[in-house]
Structure formats: structure tokens, C-alpha cells
Length: 268
Length: 318
Image (cartoon, rainbow over all chains, first blue to last red; front, side, top):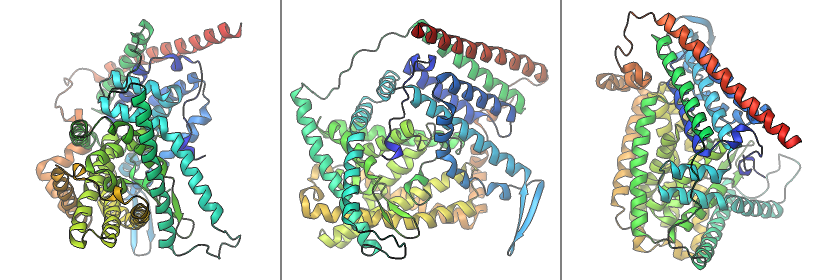
């Protein structure tokens, strides 16, 4: 199956798994915001945050390699920042000539590049940690509790419910296409028609998927009506948060706040 | 990887705080308006339909076709969703797709979700809608006209979303204009062709199998004049700003400097607050004390976490 369609939730019983999803969502977003607010080049604070993330990952008991593997997802985007090393003016530490152009890598450029890379790496790990320790339905109820629009959360929930169904459906369509397209072991030999023919075949699959989803949504709607759906999706009320969750929320908030204050003082 | 819609999902850490907040404000207003419209105009049946269609679009992004040299064409789906569902529902569906990608699969960051929603749901859908309606007006409501309009809607939605991403990166000081804008535009001009062709293929299939879906009743199109205007404004703004910024980056910077915008976007917000800390106080010692306190807090918290895990382990091990 496509890697994107595997449920990222990792079963476990760590303190992170036990924490209320509302607390985790709030603190996760606050952590990423804090990371974004720290100015460029405050390496000590970056490494503090990184150490914090890594510790949390160890406590979660999921296994560090899981996080390290998944966090490489955002890596290709760093290409967009790479040219900054050469375009930001400043003391240069390295020059070379390529054809008619002279390149000189500046230290401020390198600082900016490394800062963006580190910040992005820290942030994505927090997001991975959140989804690895929280089942998605819990994240949805937490979003509802944090006053996200009701209609949107309802759509998210239904989308999540049928994501894997349609992933299977798409895999079947792709498998059927593969089964009907002779492939040659010789890469020189193109199978199938022109590019536009192949694209239109792929488009046919997309259209087919659309029709199937529409028909399924009609059946789902009728099934929901039969079970008393009146435009509102009801779920069990969320329990009050226990004291320990309030403690974690306050504690995490305090740590992030101190990091922000520290970054303020250090950047002056 | 580089030749797919993935390149449009900005991760966290790449945009400045000001750009982030502006994008959130715009996205929240547009999505909020779409929610109100959909909630009002369309029945309760829309909720399961939009959820299921969002799942289908997400899965449909797996559909690819070989182009050449190991690269492949992919589907983003904004244009297809817009043509089949009307702009308001499509905005919500694309918002859901982008949000789930960020929330669960880390395709794109959480804090930049506002910007990603803006690029793919707001720009993608409104531009696709504007282009589709415009081309349909020119070509007429024939099979050929629908296919040509569908191709254009797909190509423009990808292209302008990419320009929007590039401009956000440039204004955030993350990517140099001279490089980012031509690179994004060039790559996505190709990706857009793939998107356009798949959209055409899907429309051709639907015209044969379910022609009723392509000619939706007027309820889908009523009151969507505002999307037309939005799509038109976004198209013009992006098409003007992008070449200007890449050919004459000084020009963009001059305009931004005049308005003080670039300075604002490249600094963390709170650095703008002057004299936030009273000068003269020994910052050094405050920093030391704070750092010490922070260290103690963190070690205390982590210790608690480890102890909790250990205790749980012992209880369940017994």
C-alpha cells in the first residue's frame, strides 16, 4: 500500500499516549509556533528544542527510527532555500566559478539556510509525534473542543472514515490498468500509446473513481438517514480533563514560554 | 517527488510569521464564507458527499501515468473538483484534503496550513473556476469546449498555485526571487500539463458515463459570482507580481520597502515591538537564571514521564 495511506497511529501505553488529545494538540501547535518565532542563528535554543523533541520521542516508546524516517518527508523542500547561501550578501567563506558565473557562499546565507532547515525538521517531528501517539478520531474531537468549525470537522471525520476504502478502490483501479498494459523488460520499448493517451487513461481512472465515490456517498447518506441522521453527527460528550492533563498543559506551556523569553533576551 | 503536487505543500519553518498570519486570515475568511454558503444552500446530504469526495480526491492523487525518464504525471484535483461540484463545495473539499495531508501524513506543516489552504483550495479552486467559466463562454457548451476548458482549468490551477507558493517563499525571505519564481513556474508549467490531461481524461469519461454530472443544475453555480471575481483578481495579481518579482526583484523590494512590508515579514513579529525589554537590566544574568530554571523544569518533566512509563510497565508486567 502507498505509504501515505497507512494509519500513522502507533499503539502504545506511554504517558504521551495517555495524555488528553486536547492538551497534545494545543501544546503541539504552541511548540511549532514557538519554533517559528525563534530568530535565525540561535543554535543553542534550536538544539534545546531538538533535544526536547527527541526526548519526547524516546518517552513515547515508538522508536526513534520511525520518527527519523518519516521526518525526511519535508527534506526535498530544503532545495528551495539552498540558493540563499549564495544570494544573501555577507562575509563569504567559499567561492567557486561555474561557467560565466561566480558564486560566493556567505556566512549569513549559511546561517539562514541552516536555521530554516533545523526549524522545519523540529516542527515536522512534533507533528509526527502528535499523530503517532493520538488516534485521529481523538484529534477530531479535540478540534471540535477547540472550536474548529463543526461542518469542517464533520467532513474531516467522514473523509478519514472513507480514506482507506478509497485507497483500496484506487489500488484496484491501478492494478487493473497494470494487468491490462503489457510491459516490456526492455526500458527502451515504450508500451501503450502516446503521453496524452496515457494521461487520458489515467484521467479515465480518476473519473471512474469520482463516479464510484458519488454513488457510494449516496448509499452512505441513505444509510445515515436510516440511522436517524438529521444533519448533525453526534458523539459521546468529552469527559472533563483530569488534573494530570491540566498539569501537563500548564507545564508544557511554561517551558515553551520560558524558551520564548530566553530567545528574546538572547537576540538583543 | 519533485514532479508532483508535493512541491506545493510547504512544510513548517519556511514562511515568515507575517506571511503565515496573512495567509491564515485570508483562508479563514474564504473557508468560513464557503462553510456558511454550503451550510445554507445545500442540504444535509452535502456533508457525507463532501467527506467521501474528499477521500476520493485524496486517493485519486495516487493515480499517475508515466511521462518519460522515470517521471510521472499526477493529479491534484482542484480543477476536477471545481468543475464537478461547484466552487464552494470544492473549496471545502480541497481544504479537507490539504488539512488531512498536513494533520496525519505531514505533507505540509501545521502552522503553514493556512498558506497551503490558500494556495491549493483558494487559489487552485477559484482560478480553476474562473478559467473554466471563461473558456466555456468562448468555446461554447460542446464536448470539445468542455474538454478544452477542463484542460485550461487544470493547467492554470496548478500554475497559479505554484506562483503563489513561490511568491510566499520570496516574500518570507526563504528563496531568492530570481531563482524561485522561474524554477517553480517552469516545473509547474509541465506538471500543469499532466494535471490538464488527466482532467480532460476524467471529463471525457464522465461525459460518456454520467453526462448529468458535467452539466450541473444552476444551484451549483448561483451566487458564485464572487468566486469568479476572486479567481480573476488572484490570477491577475499573481500573473503580474510573479514576473515582475523575478525580472526586477529590486522592483518588488522597492514597493515592499516603501510600505515597510518586507522588513516586517523577515523579522519575527515580536522584534517589531520596540524596547520590549528595558535596556540596562543585566540581560546576561537574567538569561542565565532563566536557562537554569528551564533546564530544571525540562529534566523534572522528562523524569516524571519516564517514571510514569516505568511504573505502568511494572504494573502491567506483574
